[in-house]
Image (cartoon, rainbow, N blue to C red; front, top):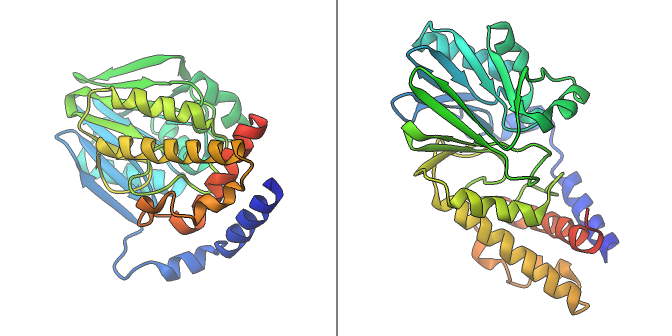
Length: 287
């Protein structure tokens, strides 16, 4: 059963393997590689291609989140300099994956203190990324110029050291990868703990903010997107567990209408089979 699911997922992965040139060719007319959107009095949402991050301008300096990559970091720094000449004081990493955490050296060279959950350091070193000089466990708050950013780790969900962030003065959150609005989970849900991913989303739902900046998606999204993603994962999880308990093939969940309410979500056709592979492995092998 798992072998069959893996073959299906691999075939989809190959079919989706596009070169950078092909991706560029498929971009809609007028699509900008980078885009900056002011989303509160102090916070700007920055998009580089399909990844998103943010920075906050305070009276004492600038706080920056995920650098994405070197090119994005340089472009974001240039945008910051159009707005303020105040020093870059902190760079906050959401987690260790290179598609969000590369390029940190750009801000380190600009004078920023690099900050991450302690669990990120060994993985980022292994990936050759600029590692944090300030680390934390559990929860941590950075305060600058009368504004603060709260960082929370709720255990394993996606990656090894995920930080969920909240900016109380702006009524904003920052959530990377575990919630991409209007999208099923990305491909094979790599390095994930599906059960604690769901538990993490429940904890985020209890936090106080109205909107959040997603690591992928629009400049901001309503908090309700967190609930929608939890409900998707819960339905996927319960459906896989039921199929396994009844001796049925979980692969059928992708096409039998169980998840039909999510048919308009990004990745529904191609990624749901991969999501199922991940859930089957988790509930059969616990890894």
